[in-house]
Length: 146
Image (cartoon, rainbow, N blue to C red; front, side):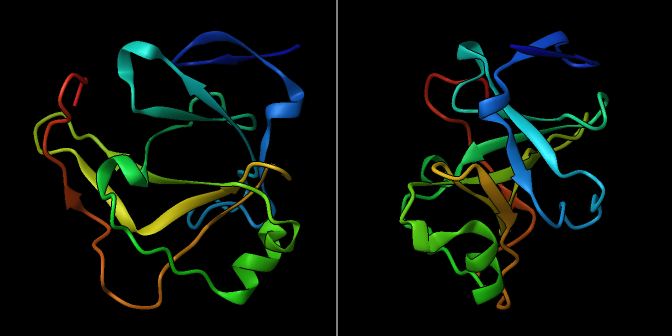
C-alpha cells in the first residue's frame, strides 16, 4: 500500500493498482494525471476523486446512472483511443459535482469522467453537443447525503 497526505482525508492509504490515469489530465487541470477514487459509505453514492499530484485537489463525483439512468454517453474517437476501449473493459462513468456553500449542488453532465476499469485509464469526455448541462441541478437522493 502507498500513502499520500491529503487535505480531505489526512494520510490516505491506497493500492497503487487502483490509480486512475488521465493521459491528458482534466480540462483546466492538465497537470493532474493520477487520481484514486475514495468511497465513504456515509456519502454514497458520492465518490471522491483525489489527486495524487496535489493533496489539496479532490473532486466530488457521482455515478451517471445514479443521477440520470437514461444518460447517453458520447465520446470522440480520440477519447475511445485514450481509454483503450478496444480492450472491452467495463466502464465507470462519473459526473463531477459542484457543491457551493450557499446554493444548489450541480452535476457536470456535459463532460463526464469515463474510466476503463480494466486498464484504469480515464478521460473527461466533453460532448460536442449541448444535450446536457455542465451545471445540472440535482434533487436529493433518497437515503443519501445529497
